[in-house]
Length: 453
Image 1: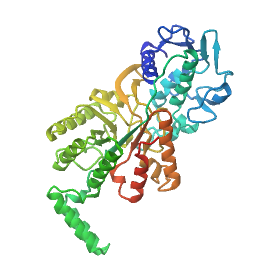
Image 2 (image 1 turned 90 degrees about the vertical axis):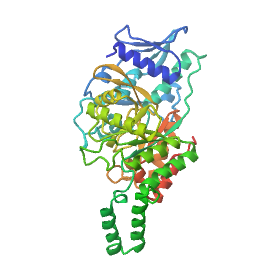
Image 3 (image 1 turned 135 degrees about the vertical axis):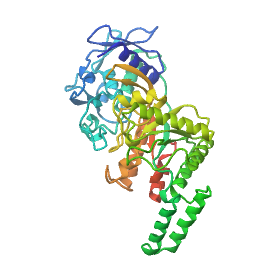
Image 4 (image 1 turned 120 degrees about the vertical axis):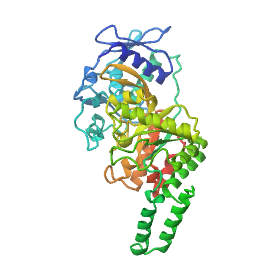
């Protein structure tokens, strides 16, 4: 499937990645040719893989050694996965007359990974209706922790340099994209007298701590007076802003604006004074406020539109002037391409949901932001994707990788960051304020938010 919309979208991907106005000629059914105005010759792809455009296709995967043909591996790996191929052409890349020919469908791979064609119509979902990492081709073939789209585009960049040696390709600067899903902005008993009384009785009768009882009573009365510093979840949000400001980072905070309809949603309302105070506090500190689509909004267009409008109204009432809205879906629930279309209809300019809950890594094969595509209708979308690389609980939690607070855990997280930086991409980090209650959490977090390459 190489229709006009696919070609136009791939041209945008190439142009954004390399910074030059490449054109793709698909006039021949069995090849694609990349050209550049005013430049002699072309780069041909002559082994197109239709499996990249097929719903439910089972793709083989072989490995290619870049060094065998005097190409460099940007991440230093000796081999590069080739989804879609069951054999290895030799050579894979060759010069024929004034052209270079690549016997692997790199553009098809880009389409397959970025459009999430793999996820269309899947039924092997987890209990939250999510396509899990463990069902993915990347996990099964052991490349989920590698941005293989970026790796292959780097190879294509080397071919471009051989074909047109005088060209200057775009040099990407690695960036850190820090975010926090505000599922719980404060502890429930901070604003409830009955819950505070119940907690107080537990402090005295079970935990045998008069100091805890005093602290909880103080927290309640200070909360009523509009002072939130004793609430640990509110304090964690303040801490996130403080440490990231010191590191020179801007943080995106995503809020659930509709709590009804699921036990998995939060326990706060956007018209609460504390929430409006929090929005003003975040905005005045130079950070971003975004939408955390509620649990059941991912496949409900009217719901996500309503939730986005609630956020706009609340920001207006709170005096927050931020115009554009980005966001992430609660529990990372996603249906390709329905969720993207619904968010676009709601006026959300970017989404940051496309990472897996059960494993960190590169769900889209890239750590660069990109314009999204609908693989069912074959249409380009206006909404952009900022792929999620790492959520803290994916590594630490016992229900996922279960590495806990270990050297192995922090080493694994840091390696993902370094791979993003090596390909000039964005290390997209999600860390919940509710997961910053211990010294171990804070130590891990601080080690990841620095901007060093």
